[in-house]
Length: 528
Image (cartoon, rainbow, N blue to C red; front, side, top):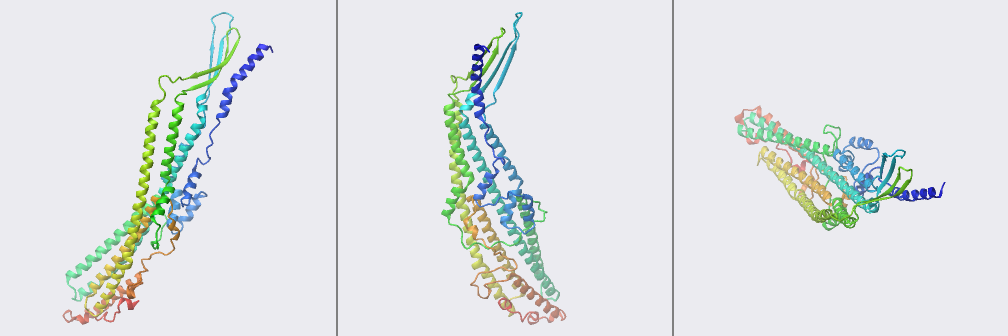
């Protein structure tokens, strides 16, 4: 090989080395195999929610085969909610951006063959290889910006996961509360039916006017309508919960008709505000986005003077057989435009991002304050029902039984009093439900499991055995099933008396004979 050929060969290797090195250094950005779902699950787990990552089908089958708790409903929603699964899929877009940011543009290979019009001359053949030097220079900045965007997307998706968890908890308590009210309304309707049966016996014996009988029948019909409406409401709440969990409303899953007993105390407001500032993933994502836009603005500030810069190598064989090899450079000179438009857009984006951080900060503060106030208000209403209204209604019923025993009032006045007592029980159940709904909203506002949730015990309110507060005499603790049986005893006793009276002429009935069937009934406190 001649010296000229050796020199040309060395030049070729030297000129072609730079683009090859650039290609090798560009590499590919690392994208997690799960596209970042594990990172999202970690964010959610840090905020107190359980994300099942194993055999989700087995977990789902195990959970739906038992009576669901609030935690069970949340766990099902986090692995089975279709909308949430679609949200997780958005990680693919962010991962694609990260992958793209970690690469430079593919090199461009060019070639041409030009035929000479002179006899005996060879075709002119040229090859060129060009790659973007601008992409290589800006690679670290683009990687950094893509990683920041990726982190913000994961925070946004984590916020959506927590939102779904809050939706599931809220829907669960609405369903359980509706079921419990429906159970109570069914008992009230049964009691109203017994009252009508008794009224019909009184009417047949000539001791009740048609108007009073019609009133009792209307009241029983209204009680039945209330029970049917409560059943419909419970079914609607079941459908809502099923939708959040991704389960069919007609599936075999169910939840107990028993609300948990309210906690003895809730978390202080100051602690919740501090926890929300640390935990709200949407707020963290807003901060990350503002930081990313500010960084992007800085990168654009210095790259706008760089322009598009492409470098490469070109090799050409002339018609006489000589070879020409040399570097290529294409540079967009920033003479007429320096990407000022991009800077203006980024300035606007930065102002919007900063304003969004401020808006969300205020919104989080307001949401926590509002949810805390609603929880405190519900707790106060629970206390009023538990300590004042329900005991008062229980005492009124007890006194009414005593007055009915001495024929100071009629059996239907007693039944009306008992109906008012049951209305108080329903109101109590509803405010307890409101308390748990308010706590679910407080959890949503804080963006984290409430510290006091660890104190939730296994005690549940039971329609058939509703514990009442102390301080109401012999009625400090009431058994609702016992109350129902006692009321049925009152009515059955009245019926037996009326059966005895019905054998007599109607005009012979007297107040004393009307009371013959239940004159020995004891006050409710003594009958338990």
